[in-house]
Image (cartoon, rainbow, N blue to C red; front, side):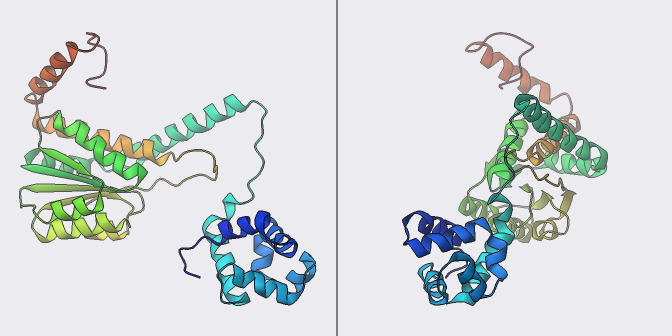
Length: 293
């Protein structure tokens, strides 16, 4: 079986579509993955109420070479996604308040972690590089990081800066190949191991661009970038809640954007005024509304 294949999905299919013996074994695997990944074949067969050859045939029907390969893939599945298989039941009491407290509380905690730990000297250095750049490339791959790359684009073009965001790996690699020393590349990655982002920052630096990474310290991306703004917001164990790290990274984007605007100075205000004026024609003309949001 290839490492990329999902053995749990296959087991779940046998739990409903297999023979009687296969359904017994599949149910045992899904009920106690840790046990099956370690127990001797005789114990597995006894607990499922089947013969040992049936266990071997079951393993091979899943695409495994044998029992040892079967247990290896089960252990791998347990390590990668075991917490998603048998989660604790949801508590329905006071559900709305619990969800509200969890989402908002963790978002606030993530932003406070940024506030207490970020190096504003580094943010200031990044802002100076961006404000002096002839062009800016913003990279990010995956749900959170690609959104942050686009959000930086949204913030910086309003300041009159030439900025483009790319989340497509091929575009990241191609644009990194045609940078100049007047280009600034800023890359976002929570893990720091997105291949296209790491490769593109390496390529851009090779061709003389200034490279900046907002990512986990010690990661592959952190090692490739010229300037590192460390980002590390640990996740909690709630499997149902979207990640709170994106609130923290959004705060970092806003810190960079505001510091860059102040580094450029009052000249950014004319562009912001023009944007506000152009949108007033098609939107509600309320000066209190966010600019273009």
